[in-house]
Length: 117
Length: 112
Image (tube, rainbow over all chains, first blue to last red; front, top):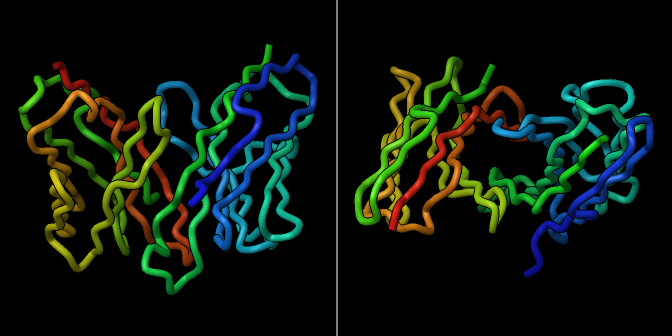
């Protein structure tokens, strides 16, 4: 079946611009995660959704970052007034409901590479 | 913090050799997962070992877990050029929903 998809794959923004990054999780997956990966580093947790509820946003670096998943499927990560330090790969991952055999496995999308000039 | 720290930072071997990577963590865990990341396939789950397990196999992968030492190792046997990637461990615990915390990873290069 289809995996996690993300769009756009690449985004170049001028400093101060707003950007919106989209994630389409695997159909039926309850949990959705966003991670930020700087060059040469491991992914860092940003936020977590269970269906449409955002249960953990402790990793969002500033109030310029906002995520939503209004219908419990597609999610959007929005970054307002982008700064150069926002340049990174943004990864989305989904995992199935608790009770599923692979409930703890996260399935990652290909990421969106954001470059802020 | 649940963050795992991988060691070594980089590993270079010849095709056919075995590769061993280590992971250390600081707090108690429910399970520990290993992921691989390369440019072609992104970040992919390899294997999960639970805190009450000591060893697990999956194909050419062997994972061990020593909770008393708070460490895990990933062994890749008979490596192939296609195994070239970054490998991350992610110890999990402390939340009910499986939030992952990654270290910097081990960069494995397998030369043909």
